[in-house]
Image 1 (cartoon, rainbow, N blue to C red):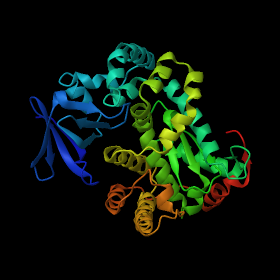
Image 2 (cartoon, helix red, strand yellow):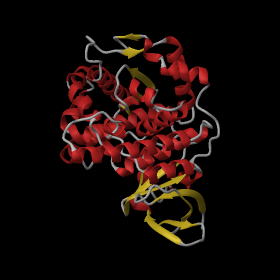
Image 3 (tube, helix red, strand yellow):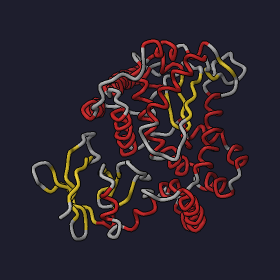
Image 4 (tube, rainbow, N blue to C red):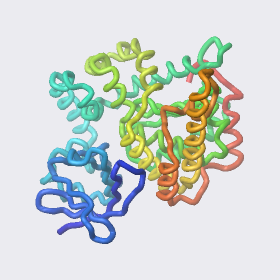
Length: 381
C-alpha cells in the first residue's frame, strides 16, 4: 500500500499532527505516528482547498470531515490518486500550461453560472476558484481604494498612502522574500495606509493593506512578517473572494461574469465594507495560519513573532470583552480593531510549535525605516 508523510488538523484544536497517508482501495487512511487509524476519507469526498503548482504541497479537505485539513508535501501524491479522485484535476496545475488553465476557467465558469447562482453561499469556494485573477485584481484595487478612504485621518481631505522611500523599499524587500516562497497566480501588492487603526487585511487579487497603527503597535519586524505571511495565506486560499461572494452573491458574480471592471468598481464601497467586517471561519483561519507558517519557514523567518502577536491579541480581546461588559462607552484597543482576526493562546502555541525558521524578517535599519514609512504620504498608491 502506497504511503505518503503528511500533516493533519482535526479542525477542533489548532494542533498539527504528523501522519502517514495510505492509499487504500477506495479512500485515504490517515494514520498517526503509532500506526493507529485516525480518519478514513473516501476518494470521492476529497477536495483541494487551493490550486497546486510545482513544488507546492497539496492541501485537502473531505466532505466526510468538513473541519479537517490534510497537507501532503510530496507532489507525487496527486499523480498517484489522480485516477481515483478525478475531481481534484480542476485545481491541480502541476505541469499544466497557463493557457489551458485560463481556457478552463472560462469554460467552467460560464457553464456553471446558471446553476451556482441559485446556491451562491454553498458554492462560493468553487466559484472563487474559477474567477480569473484579473477580475479579482480589479476588485482588490477598488477595495484598497475604499479602505484608504475609510481609514483616512479625521482631518485629512483624502486617502493617505504611506510612501517614504526607505520604508517602502524595506517593505518591498520583505514582500519579495515572503512571496518568493509560494507559487501562486497572484502578484502581491502591499499598501500601508496612514491610520491609527491596528489592522491588516488581504483583498482579492493579492492586494493587501497594513494600517500604520499595526506597525506602531508591533514590537519587532518578525511580528509584522508573521501577520503578512498569515494574510498571504488568506490570499492563496482565496478566502476574501469566497467571503465576498457569500455575502454579496449575485451582484458580485454578475459583475465578474460581464468582466466589467467599472461595474465592479461601482459597488466598491459595498465590497470594501463587506471585506473589512468579514469574519473568517475557524477552518479558514487555521488554513491561513498553516500557509503563513509554511511561508515563514521557507523564508527562514521565525514564527515566534506571529505567535507573540496572537498571544497579545488574545489578551487584548479578553480585556476588551470585560470592559464592554462593564461599560457601554467605546474605547480603543488592539483587540477591538483587530476583531476580524480572532486569536487564542492555543492558536499562538500551535503557530510557534510549527515554526522552524531561525532568522529575522529584516535588519534593524529596515525595521526603523518601515515604522517611519508614513512620514511621507500621497493620495494615490
